[in-house]
Image (tube, rainbow, N blue to C red):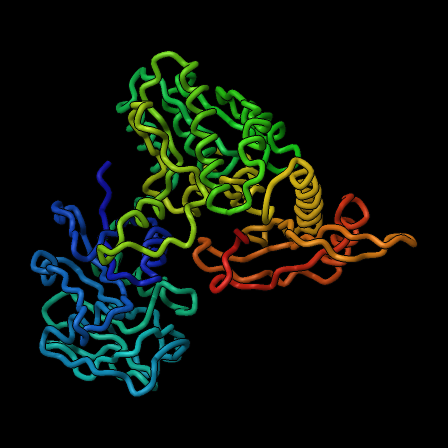
Amino acid sequence: MQHNKVLILDFGSQYTQLIARRVRELNIYCEIHPFNKIPADSDSFKAVILSGSPNSVRGEDVLHPDLSEIRGKKPLLAVCYGAQYLAHFSGGEVAESNTREYGRANLGFVKPDEDFLENIHEGSQVWMSHSDTIKKLPTGGVLLASTNDVENAAYKIEGEATYGIQFHPEVYHTTDGHQLLQNFLVKIAKVEQDWTPNAFVEETVEELKNKLGNDKVVLGLSGGVDSSVAAMLLHKAIGKNLYCIFVNNGLLRKNEFEDVLHQYEGMGLNVKGVDASARFLDALAGKSDPEEKRKTIGRVFIEVFDDEAHEIKDVKWLAQGTIYPDVIESVSATGGPSATIKSHHNVGGLPDFMKLKVVEPLKALFKDEVRRVGRSMNMDKQLLGRHPFPGPGLAIRILGDLTPEKVRILQEVDFIFINNLRSWNLYDKVWQAGAMLLPVNSVGVMGDERTYEKCVALRAVESTDGMTADWVNLPYEFLQKTSNEIINKVKGVNRVVYDISSKPPATIEWE
């Protein structure tokens, strides 16, 4: 089935992925492409959205898209930088704003009887984020909305289905952002809302059957949402020709290897569990640098996975649970390299000598869509609601060098923390939670004896995609009970702290 598609041209805004997610929430398929790499088959897109940007249209580093096949030919929505670009280079004027226009504002004027602003009223809250402002509209520009500080907050160009806005409809703070995108895409651009989880499952299974035929496919399962949903889609398409390998690297949560294996078998998957914990811990002995730990785990995983894959005769394909943000992040919007904060939590690609073709059933989906697809296949709610867990596992939650004893301590601490979150009905209100074992000992008193033992930090964050995150205000009573339980039950720990840092500037993990 050929879906109506929406093209989002990315000028490097931190919010571009959010635009795509909001469009997908309308059950409309969209793709993000760099502003300077417009797809050759632009005919297949029914509407185009221009994103914001940290750049200025007045600077020397102006990002110029080629809109010759788009403007006036397709419905076009220009957000922030996009709106300023259309104004600045089409007879209007953009100047530096007297005050940086950032944060909440309210629409003070809304032009009546406009399809673009249907069901959006004066007083509606919008989110601004720019230091330039449109002083004069482009040729043919018609004012549609203003705020107290921004006169030209929204406009259209006469004779075209072209609209510009100086606020961000994609962020939650813009209360009618969903309505505005719906007005533009459904009412004006006439895009059909046919991108649903059920349709995705049906079409993907059909595509996989055609692509894979009777070939054998190997997939490394992690126990996480992405690899599990990818496995179920492949299982529906090729059944027993899918060979799943679940590797215990010795850095999983307490009882996780056995629990997850049991869960997978209940799903009817063809899974082999491989306990390679000793091999990983031996390779990590004495290593304390976070990047070195990550690379060691990646290398040993590849060795173990390769050994197991060679046991299966005539495998042609390697399946991966790659999702859309991974695909987007591999192509920088401005063509330059993005700063590497740390190597990705997930294990990297397998070596060339395996010579397998790659199949990625989820590469068009965001994480929340992966969960919806899983639900439409009636997958276990607990598995789909599982918090993200880093590929290197507890290795990057044990600061400093790794020993089997440190792993045991952290597994016990984490087990108490996560179980308590579940029993207090807090688990599903948290995006990700875990415990960190710190490389410090502190003085304590237990009974009448002085102790000098480990300190652990608990971390729980709220987020939608992991790109930004805020610490969760867990109840004091919960923290008190959890701290007491950890100190009383986990030998080797005498102090518990709670991490109240947001991302940015901190990251979610400590390494």
